[in-house]
Length: 193
Image (cartoon, rainbow, N blue to C red; front, side, top):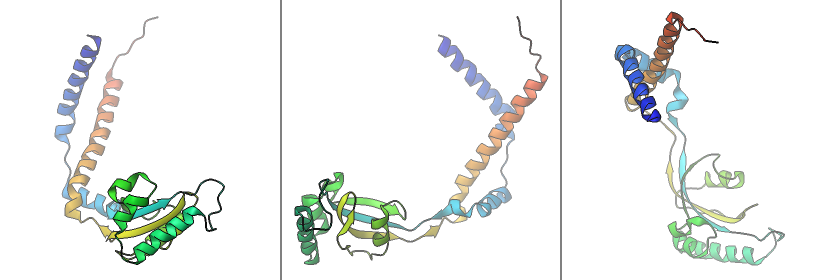
């Protein structure tokens, strides 16, 4: 019951604020345009690549550079890829990571989201190309780029609804604070001892 009363009271306050504040807020086209131009990075989408990935783990203590069973296994997989076998099929058979069922598909990534050793190589590959065997602390890797989306800027018209909503929220928050401050100044608050 107490919680219901609190909710009812909060809804009443929200409705009062709605009447006092929100209906009076207007966002002009000029404000939207200024916000767009003042925040260019917010509407810039970095280059993305879609990757598939095969990982063979190296047991702790094994030398990552020697011809270990893990290295021999990865060299065999690479040789099969070089002969034209399907990357996704080989990933389903051999990768030692959770994306096995998806044929090693990692999805889209941006620069900096991968380990540095993988990032540098991955963004240098063309679509359809696979990497040489790469060594990281996590094991041995083969990556293949399956798609590339170039860097782009979201057009003003596409960004407009998001900007309008952002500005509305900012103005609403400011107006609510002003109403609350005004009500506090007018209030006669007394404490009992």
